[in-house]
Amino acid sequence: MSQAEFVVVANRLPVDRDGDGGWRRSPGGLVTALEPVMRGSEGAWVGWPGQADLEIEPFDFEGTHLVPVVLSADDVELYYEGFSNDTIWPLYHDVIAAPRYSREWWNAYVEVNRRFAEAAAAAAAEGATVWVQDYQLQLVPRFLREARPDLTIGYFHHIPFPAYGLFSQLPWRRQVLEGLLGADVIGFQRVADAGNFARAVRRQLRYETKASGIRVPREDGSVRIALAKAFPISIDAESYVELAQRPEIQARAKEIRAELGNPKKVLLGVDRLDYTKGIRHRIKAFGELLQDQRISVEDVTLVQVASPSRERVEAYVQLRDEIELAVGRINGDFDTTSHTAIRYLHQAYPREEMVALYLAADVMLVTALRDGMNLVAKEYVASRIDNRGVLVLSEFAGAADELGSALLINPHDIQGLKDAISRAIEMQPAEQGRRMRTLRRRVRDHDVEDWSREFLAALASIHTAKEGGS
Image (cartoon, rainbow, N blue to C red; front, side, top):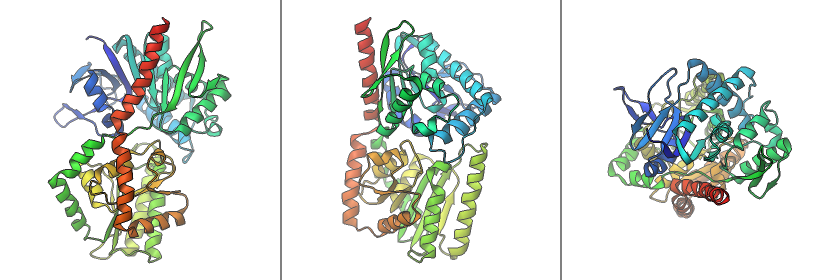
């Protein structure tokens, strides 16, 4: 095959197997975010096909050349479920769950990152741009730079980057920082994340940082500048607007409310079943509102969509048990024969059904304890073409930096969360409209194409500077 001028490297390919043995586009934030970029570039995408020991040749899908990386069952257990999701994920999310440090997991992470880097190096044309995605692949930029110094390399970190006091716990902290600094541009969701990274580099590696630039020494004694700054990710807002305008989706929204018994107010939570999302805090606050008789089960229903996630990781198994026990107790205490307090849905839904749910919901609850961005908040806002609805948003989600017209809350403050939910339920249409119009303007002005354009423009300026200096 001819090599690509633009290569994305991500843990997963942007496709899943369909029932007939073919492929379909995957759901999920990263695929949605990069789809417009890939469509316009005819690039290559390097990633795992999602099944252990699956060996398939590279193939083309909807204008993108897909380059599969083979992972064995051991790789999945050690690199993905182990180091990525039982070490890095909890450590980078403020140690909400305790990270586990295993040398065997780390060794697998190094080996798999090397394999991804080799596949990307083989797929990239001379002088190509390579964009590495997320925490599973933090060592890839350095491996790529060592193999292909001609490449322009970007890395985007979709999850938070922790404060130095937490990051310094990681036994392999220097190797991770050196891995990331293989990139020319290292992007983060929030200014605070970029600041945490720069502080870690200063403390651990003693490299000089100035504004967004980090002076990285080369082996020949010269220095190159790596850029570390915030590029907040977004959504394809117009696709949500278009779905929300469809008569059949608007009809489905009315149907959902009828199925819920036509309560006066519908509250909605939509999350992966993850301990970072604050689902327990939200359910506790809602249960207490019922208990305090500030709301009644006849008037207010909470719909909680919790899509399955990392079901072989022990912390997630335990979380599911805890949430389902809490939901069962609240429903047992407050349900009537005609009304249910919490509709708990442990499944994933297509985008059309999600937009119908967004239109059906008077209040959207995003109560993350720590979140890189949280695109659900932006999806809800984009879908509200009626300029109605209230977004209750955790200040610990990256989206809070942009969506200041939401009701911002600290999810650890259960009383404050209860008061914010009550305020959202009682908010008058005029105030809803004022807030929602401001939120929608922000989401539509700064969509996913804006995000990728800004990041790739920063990379292009580095590429131009390189060529000028060569």
